[in-house]
Image (cartoon, helix red, strand yellow):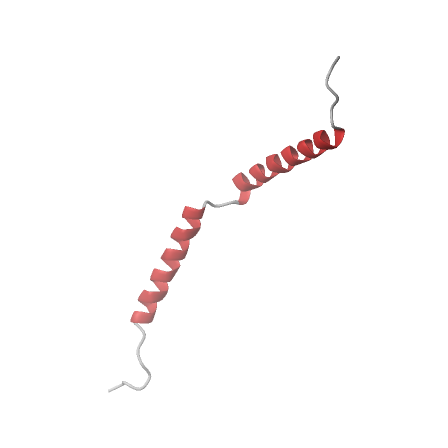
Length: 62
């Protein structure tokens, strides 16, 4: 005789697997890795620092 199956567990496991599959599809479509996000932030910070370094103070005109 076969073992009884917990239908609630089966339903929840299937829903969890479907959600994971959809998340993986969205990650491929829209997502960026953490390394990509960190690199973009570093580039933006560097550009801001360089731009601020070229700024003239308003009171030091000769």
